[in-house]
Length: 386
Ligand SMILES: Cc1cc2nc3c(=O)[nH]c(=O)nc-3n(C[C@H](O)[C@H](O)[C@H](O)COP(=O)(O)OP(=O)(O)OC[C@H]3O[C@@H](n4cnc5c(N)ncnc54)[C@H](O)[C@@H]3O)c2cc1C
Image (cartoon, rainbow, N blue to C red; front, side, top):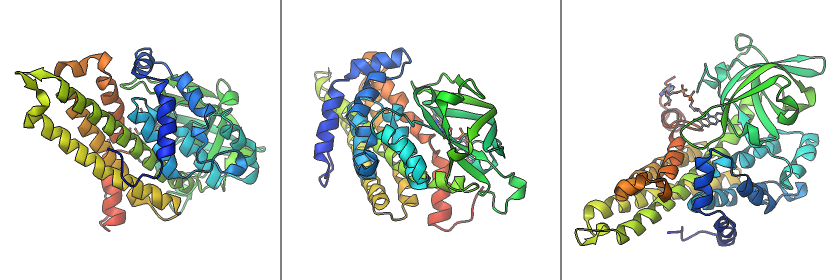
């Protein structure tokens, strides 16, 4: 089922091999315990996979986004969940593209060596949701520091990260010409911030995904932790989102193939009415349909990744790849569940777990409607609808 033109067989084989040490039982237990897959993440970091996109001069392997997406795909395809780690790939990218030389020298070697985690990015707020330019969290400069006040919601992996990228308003909305101006991004050292101006409240949720509400009460951040220029943070964040969307598209592709493999195997093995259920067109056609959708989405995923690696504009392709892949993986999840009948609901089959996990990507990091809005406005030239 692998893409014929795939150039990344060595990476696939190596990541697959690592993943064999973390079989279904491992992820099932982590899910049941609502725990973080510490050993799995440590193994990925030790093997250097999460430093794939860090340039060699900072100790990484200097692979591009395409290779990084293959790593994420293989994790999900093996039954794991890249949601525990994918932040490390794209948050590092924000630092790499927009950070100063001093910031890169300070953080990137530690990240590349697997000693420092930059798993979190805090953008979403409870009262403003997708309308990001209306965020209310503020960072006010005072005596060589920024003082942060406000609230964030759904901020993932904070309890398993050392660093977090924070988007906050540095100039009030009423004082900027364009609403996308006047926001800035910062590196927050979570080891220093939690308990000293930053409170973290976990949000129990559908998936075993560590995500939190954050409360900032006069959190002080050193001035040198500002990334890039003050007021341009929204642009820096947007630049990173194309990588995020493409990586998540690849995770959905991995999920999709996993669901198809499981559905196909079961449809061949399960005998009802004296024949394999897969002999019925009513069972095999939906599986074939879901497979076709995944294969098609996969092409857009590679297109987005290749454009990104060639430093070409890829906003439309990254958004469309994420849309197609999230839709295809969800369809495959449904088909897999249906093919398994009642057994799909049993935890020991892992289908209900992956079903919950893949559902997330129709909502986060950007919801389907907002992708339609992007394509309508930026690709088709229709009026902005919001
Ligand atoms: C498990 C999880 C992890 C997350 N991790 C992070 C993280 O690490 N960092 C972070 O910053 N955020 C994170 N998020 C937040 C996520 O990015 C948002 O939930 C998502 O962008 C949607 O925002 P919202 O929940 O505020 O929905 P809302 O903006 O309130 O939207 C609700 C619904 O209305 C629709 N809608 C809203 N406006 C329009 C419109 N104009 N036209 C058509 N439809 C519209 C949306 O499509 C959506 O379906 C996470 C979310 C979840 C669930």
